[in-house]
Image 1 (cartoon, rainbow, N blue to C red):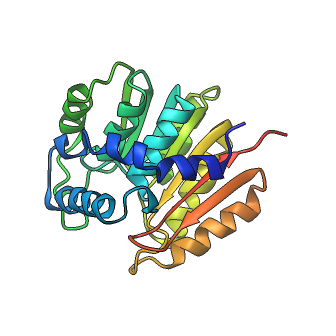
Image 2 (cartoon, rainbow, N blue to C red):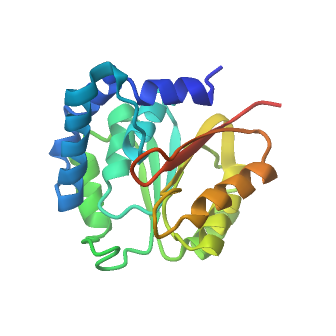
Length: 230
């Protein structure tokens, strides 16, 4: 029953954004989080219910609240802000977090699994947590081989930003997305990675069962899709 337009409408709603802002600034801050928090607040202050903006955070929060995922898979974790956002939408979700934990990733601190685990606890997580460390092009196929029956209601791909690497991650995980589940793909209009939009479109051609929305009007761009039934 849930469709991509409904999810988008909820993600940009003043109701959801105001709820998001009750906890967003409680995440362990870095300069980027502080900037985004101020951006959200200024958008609502200027435009109120007419403001329409989407990024990985409000899309994931909306998806988590609407879908109530049992299992969530994320490629590209860093400090755990997106993980904690999903947990805020559904504290009982089981989390499967894949990252290489590269130091100084994208010029920002990348403190590792113990830090993220503590952040999840602070944000009220009650589900299971599995950290899988290493290159997702290797760890994802191996993990799926070891867990052949495990599927997901919500998936985020925000790891390898190379054209080939991002495509490989998407092609690896989409077959494990449940019907009615949501897949989120970040940075499709990032000036350093403009090809990611074309990667997303290529994936949609491979999986016609995905109903997609892309937002590229401001920010670094976000795409998401819901898997339709047969």
